[in-house]
Image (cartoon, rainbow, N blue to C red):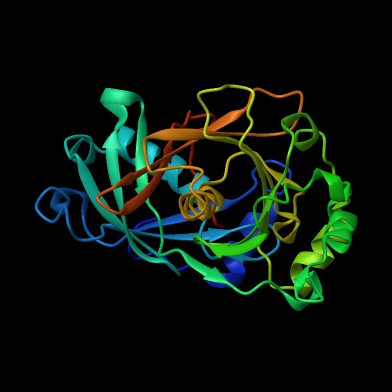
Length: 286
């Protein structure tokens, strides 16, 4: 959107709802400066991103950010010439985009600040995680949880409940009830639930993940940047990953798994991926 276009929050929510079932999220990209000024001011944000699902505004959406930045780099020659540039987000401040499309076919986005949070009280029983209650909401068995590692709540852009699962084969088949899990997330201030197993289909992958996001109007997200930032922080803390370039494979049984790349560069956590243009056109507001 050009800088002179104004959309209210209700306008953006309406547009996101019109795309329910077609897109998991909508990113509104508004120019802050003119395109001709980009190369001269590469360390100043030139666009501001705001994210919406069909249900509400999203604090941060990693996969939408990757898709948006790919589209901008492909359509703006001044950006394609830059190794990195910055952009602004509505709720997560200024972030960095590192352009590796020509070399690796992907680009990287710096993670929003990552913070660890207290688990909701509903998941605590006798000062331990109430695994039976958690299993009931995830529609799985207590024995599916990997007791070597804790259930944690980490904010890497979204409040992410991280749940370790022992076996890859069980992880790809877990199927919670949408309504039950949505109520659980909303009542307890959880944005998304990230299930992971260090065992993956591809041995080169750091881990296999599943991400459930019923709060935003759909059960499962098949490619998650913010959740991957939270998981990368968790894995670093528990010595399951050491910051080297790699990727998470993500998705349920029966699909070609998506890959979300992560890397720790000079203490800066980044995530990344590729994107493909599916539809190109103009959206008329009136």
